[in-house]
Length: 158
View (cartoon, rainbow, N blue to C red):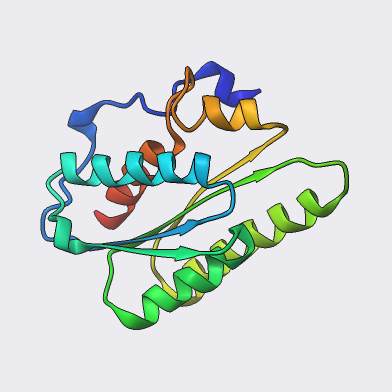
């Protein structure tokens, strides 16, 4: 597994641009809140550490991961933003539901990004079980929310 090779929270702070004078939207899924709340915390803290003003971080909650693309589009339509971060957690179950949701979410996020010409960051965990999600939201493998915020800062600088 690729993330087993890296801590999602590890990065060179000197290689990340400042978020000063930038505004960011974060859309977070309430489904699997135990996980997504930690992703949100990691993303917000990272943006703040890189000089983003708290008033320039707009957070919206949506019911589940499937609603993330619409939430991103809604944020785009309401406020000028430099990047939007989508945070969610999809855990494999016993049916193919996981495959359909993960594919739809990934394609939907990319579509908003390309259609609206704004970086929309995929900060969605797609794991086999809750233990893997915990490891990637605040455990030994770091926090995907941190990684998503670093990506947003870099993409906003483009």
